[in-house]
Each structure stands twice: as C-alpha cells, then as structure tokens.
Image 1 (cartoon, helix red, strand yellow):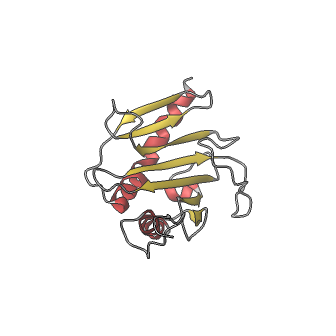
Image 2 (tube, helix red, strand yellow):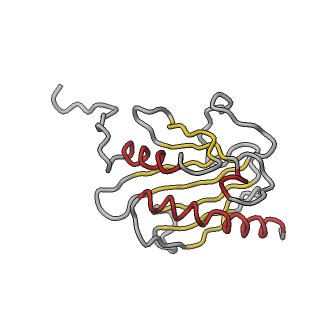
Image 3 (cartoon, one colour):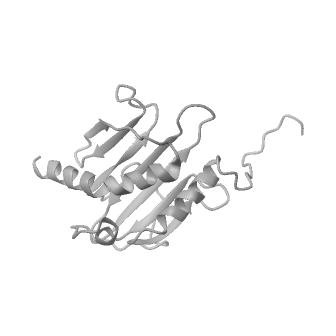
Length: 179
C-alpha cells in the first residue's frame, strides 16, 4: 500500500549502506592471521554486526594469556557527519567458541568475560568528541579515552584499530593488574 514502509530493505550491496560496509570490513578482517571465522549477525541479508572468532597470539603477533577472543564490529553509516561504529574486543578464556556455541545473547558484556575494550564513535561521550577507546572492567566501571582517526573510511579505521590493538590490550591488562 502507498506509504507503508517495508521492515527490511535490500540495498543491493551499495558500499555506503551498513550491509556494504560490513561486507568490506569482513573482507579486510579475513586477511588477518588468527581470524578463525567471521559471521554476520543476525544473518547475511540484513546484518547489524560482524563477529570474528580470534586466536589472539596469531592476530596480535605475541604470546597472549587468552587462547580465544571475539571481535565485534557494528557500523552505522550517517547521511552527514561521521559514521557511528563500535569495534569491540571480548575475551572468554579457556572456552573454545564455534559458530554453533554462541547462545544468541546481544549484551554489551558477555557473561563470563574477563576483558572487554574497543573503539567507539557515537554521541554517548561528547566531552571526548565523537571517538573514544573504551575499557570495561569486571567491576562494572568503564573508562574512556578520546581518540581521533585521520581518515574515516571504514577499512582504514579497522586497520588502524587492529594495528593499535596489541598496545591497547597491554595497557588495559596493566591497569587491570593494579586494581
């Protein structure tokens, strides 16, 4: 009927849609060592998130305490201004994860996590400008640090975050150990 809106639109893979951006990021992420698999959530037709199962020592290029981690990427293109996104790292040690073992929860902090941190660009922390690095502690405390990206292209942002990830994780773990 005229005026009715369809609940899901098929974008045909336009590169400036969420689906198009997540597909570009998926292609970039799959080239990284230590990425066991990637998948779109809730599925490939209208994805809202890209998840990757990670073997941290291979991805980070160093010995690492946790054998398994998850990288979650959400991206929301904006018609004007900078896109909103979250590139979040979750650790769940000593628990092998497979595509069928996820319980479907969509919380910020998965049950049993030991560490969660990541880059966010949104309207939540205006005192830090749009972009920040966020550390989420087991106690429930959250610390945020302002960051800036010289380029806003999604693949460039992801590449920048992946390059900074080893140092960010080391700093975060050092702060966790001093609590």
